[in-house]
Amino acid sequence: MSINDVVIIGAGPAGLGTAIQLKRYKIEAILLEKEAVGGLLRNANLVENYPGFPNGISGRDLVELFKKQLENSQVLPIFEEALEVDYRENVFIIKTTRRVIISRIVVVASGTKPKRLPNINISKEAEKRIFYEVYHLGHVTNEKIAIIGSGDAAFDYALNLSKKNKVIILNRGVKVKCLSLIFKRALKNSYISYVESIEVEGVKYHDNNLILVCHNSTGKQEIYTSYLVVAIGREPSLDFFSKNLKMNLKRLRSLKKLYMVGDVQNGIYRQTAIAVGNGIKAAMEIYRELKGEKP
Ligand SMILES: Cc1cc2nc3c(=O)[nH]c(=O)nc-3n(C[C@H](O)[C@H](O)[C@H](O)COP(=O)(O)OP(=O)(O)OC[C@H]3O[C@@H](n4cnc5c(N)ncnc54)[C@H](O)[C@@H]3O)c2cc1C
Image (tube, rainbow, N blue to C red; front, top):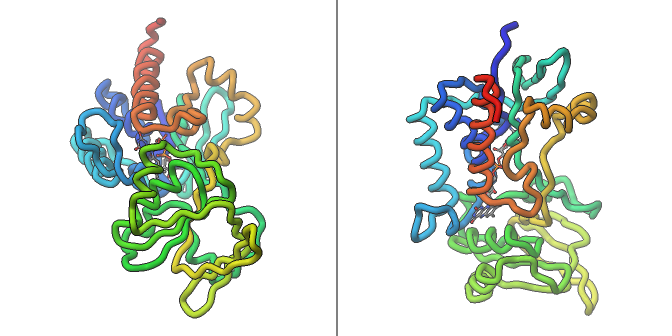
């Protein structure tokens, strides 16, 4: 089996930054993507902090530009999920949904996964109308959609969905962990309502409707909606690391064999420009490593 120089896991902004920069050095990398190019950015309502777009740009449009740049750079993602990544005898062994790939270097750009709803009563039928990203609801119009959450994502999702639907945001507390300008925009929007101190305890499905069984200070309340979006936080997406790899992670990172770029390692600093920058920096370091240049 041939040994590749670099495998990148994830074609979100971080993986794209890595792949495009590597291509400039004529280093052929395998770019794996389990779902779609652009990653989480596909959900962003209006990206106002990515330089070059003075009036902001929607996440979806920015992803289209990224795709064009990939095409022009002749980077072709492979749409396969990395199921397991192990490290043995100085190489990485990457098992995907279709093959096994061997590589000297791995760049992990797998972003984050959503925190799931805790153990509440949800009927099987209701499950089909519960989403963790709004990208999947792009086609939905004139419906009522509930969002659970109190952070940037919840309010950004609401602004996005309110262009074609009515939205209700349900916050179980009174604290909002959202950029104040986004919060204010949402409050001003007549298609968005915001309710505090309300906890969803169960989700039923009846007659084409979701029924959210909620609890607030006055007792129980039922809210009827068409869809539910859950935005209660995200955590690094790293399920594919083998036990052995987890044990050797620190060493492999310091040896510059394994790189972690973007949201997967940025904690609360989860932003597109940071992810792209991490990816470009990793590619520059990889170039030096492969050329044998020492800093
Ligand atoms: C609602 C919302 C609004 C936002 N607004 C802004 C904004 O205004 N400005 C800003 O800068 N940022 C914004 N962001 C954040 C931005 O989207 C992220 O910081 C950015 O997408 C992170 O890029 P990433 O490549 O690190 O991870 P991701 O974008 O999460 O990409 C990771 C990719 O890896 C893939 N992947 C995961 N596991 C595997 C596997 N095992 N095998 C193969 N592929 C895998 C995923 O499918 C995904 O495509 C927003 C995010 C959200 C949710």
